[in-house]
Length: 123
Image 1 (cartoon, helix red, strand yellow):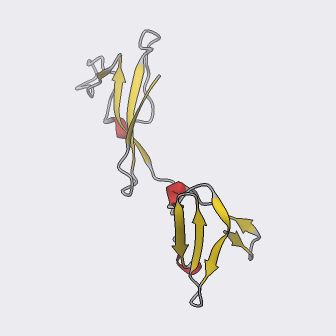
Image 2: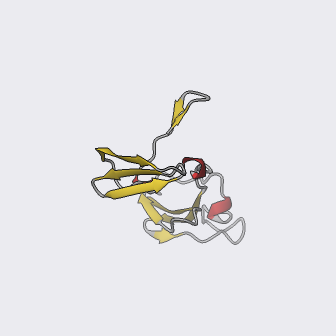
Protein backbone atom coordinates (compact mmCIF):
# COMPACT_ATOMS: atom_id res chain seq x y z
CA UNK A 1 0.00 0.00 0.00
CA UNK A 2 1.38 3.39 -0.94
CA UNK A 3 0.73 6.40 1.28
CA UNK A 4 1.05 9.45 -0.94
CA UNK A 5 0.98 11.86 2.03
CA UNK A 6 4.30 10.66 3.47
CA UNK A 7 5.49 8.74 0.38
CA UNK A 8 5.81 5.44 2.25
CA UNK A 9 4.88 1.84 1.48
CA UNK A 10 3.27 -0.77 3.73
CA UNK A 11 3.76 -4.39 2.71
CA UNK A 12 1.19 -7.05 3.57
CA UNK A 13 1.80 -10.80 3.78
CA UNK A 14 -0.18 -14.00 4.20
CA UNK A 15 -0.12 -13.32 7.95
CA UNK A 16 -2.27 -10.27 7.21
CA UNK A 17 -4.71 -12.37 5.16
CA UNK A 18 -3.24 -11.99 1.67
CA UNK A 19 -3.95 -15.08 -0.46
CA UNK A 20 -0.25 -15.66 -1.20
CA UNK A 21 3.00 -14.02 -2.18
CA UNK A 22 2.30 -14.03 -5.90
CA UNK A 23 -0.31 -12.09 -7.81
CA UNK A 24 -1.19 -12.58 -11.47
CA UNK A 25 -0.78 -9.82 -14.06
CA UNK A 26 -4.04 -8.32 -15.38
CA UNK A 27 -6.03 -9.84 -12.51
CA UNK A 28 -7.06 -6.65 -10.73
CA UNK A 29 -10.43 -4.93 -10.68
CA UNK A 30 -11.76 -1.75 -9.09
CA UNK A 31 -15.56 -1.73 -8.91
CA UNK A 32 -17.73 1.39 -9.21
CA UNK A 33 -18.12 1.54 -5.41
CA UNK A 34 -14.32 1.46 -4.91
CA UNK A 35 -13.87 -2.19 -3.91
CA UNK A 36 -10.59 -3.70 -5.11
CA UNK A 37 -10.03 -7.28 -6.28
CA UNK A 38 -6.59 -8.85 -6.82
CA UNK A 39 -6.11 -12.40 -8.07
CA UNK A 40 -3.16 -14.63 -7.30
CA UNK A 41 -1.93 -18.20 -7.32
CA UNK A 42 -3.94 -19.14 -4.20
CA UNK A 43 -7.20 -17.30 -4.88
CA UNK A 44 -8.06 -13.63 -4.66
CA UNK A 45 -8.30 -10.80 -2.17
CA UNK A 46 -11.04 -8.22 -2.05
CA UNK A 47 -11.27 -5.14 0.13
CA UNK A 48 -12.16 -1.49 0.38
CA UNK A 49 -8.92 0.51 0.72
CA UNK A 50 -10.40 2.85 3.35
CA UNK A 51 -11.37 -0.12 5.56
CA UNK A 52 -7.90 -1.63 6.00
CA UNK A 53 -7.21 -1.98 9.72
CA UNK A 54 -3.91 -0.60 10.91
CA UNK A 55 -1.84 -2.95 13.05
CA UNK A 56 -1.69 -1.95 16.71
CA UNK A 57 1.97 -2.88 16.99
CA UNK A 58 3.69 -5.86 18.45
CA UNK A 59 1.92 -8.11 20.92
CA UNK A 60 3.47 -8.09 24.38
CA UNK A 61 5.65 -11.12 25.08
CA UNK A 62 5.35 -12.70 28.53
CA UNK A 63 7.65 -15.38 29.96
CA UNK A 64 5.37 -17.96 31.55
CA UNK A 65 7.88 -20.48 32.92
CA UNK A 66 11.59 -20.75 33.67
CA UNK A 67 13.33 -24.11 33.97
CA UNK A 68 16.78 -25.29 34.99
CA UNK A 69 17.80 -28.60 33.44
CA UNK A 70 14.21 -29.03 32.20
CA UNK A 71 12.70 -28.71 35.69
CA UNK A 72 10.43 -25.79 36.50
CA UNK A 73 11.67 -23.54 39.27
CA UNK A 74 9.52 -22.68 42.22
CA UNK A 75 9.56 -19.27 43.82
CA UNK A 76 11.85 -19.05 46.85
CA UNK A 77 9.82 -19.26 50.07
CA UNK A 78 12.26 -17.13 52.10
CA UNK A 79 15.83 -15.79 52.03
CA UNK A 80 17.21 -19.24 52.96
CA UNK A 81 15.56 -20.96 49.99
CA UNK A 82 18.22 -21.67 47.30
CA UNK A 83 15.85 -21.16 44.36
CA UNK A 84 17.17 -18.37 42.12
CA UNK A 85 13.57 -17.38 41.35
CA UNK A 86 12.54 -14.82 43.98
CA UNK A 87 9.15 -13.85 42.48
CA UNK A 88 6.84 -14.94 39.67
CA UNK A 89 8.82 -15.24 36.44
CA UNK A 90 6.55 -12.76 34.66
CA UNK A 91 7.51 -10.12 37.25
CA UNK A 92 11.23 -10.99 37.36
CA UNK A 93 13.64 -8.50 35.81
CA UNK A 94 16.86 -10.50 36.41
CA UNK A 95 18.00 -13.89 37.71
CA UNK A 96 21.43 -14.69 39.05
CA UNK A 97 22.69 -18.17 38.19
CA UNK A 98 25.92 -19.99 38.95
CA UNK A 99 28.10 -21.28 36.16
CA UNK A 100 26.83 -24.80 36.94
CA UNK A 101 23.25 -23.71 36.16
CA UNK A 102 23.95 -23.54 32.45
CA UNK A 103 20.93 -25.32 30.92
CA UNK A 104 17.84 -23.13 30.99
CA UNK A 105 14.52 -23.16 29.18
CA UNK A 106 11.86 -20.49 28.89
CA UNK A 107 8.20 -20.83 27.99
CA UNK A 108 6.62 -17.69 26.65
CA UNK A 109 3.38 -16.47 25.17
CA UNK A 110 2.57 -13.51 22.96
CA UNK A 111 -0.51 -11.76 24.29
CA UNK A 112 -2.20 -11.69 20.91
CA UNK A 113 -5.73 -12.94 21.28
CA UNK A 114 -6.05 -13.39 17.52
CA UNK A 115 -3.32 -16.06 17.59
CA UNK A 116 -3.16 -18.60 20.41
CA UNK A 117 0.38 -19.86 19.73
CA UNK A 118 2.62 -20.75 22.65
CA UNK A 119 6.31 -21.32 22.08
CA UNK A 120 9.18 -22.86 24.01
CA UNK A 121 12.80 -21.93 23.53
CA UNK A 122 15.81 -23.71 25.00
CA UNK A 123 19.36 -22.49 25.44
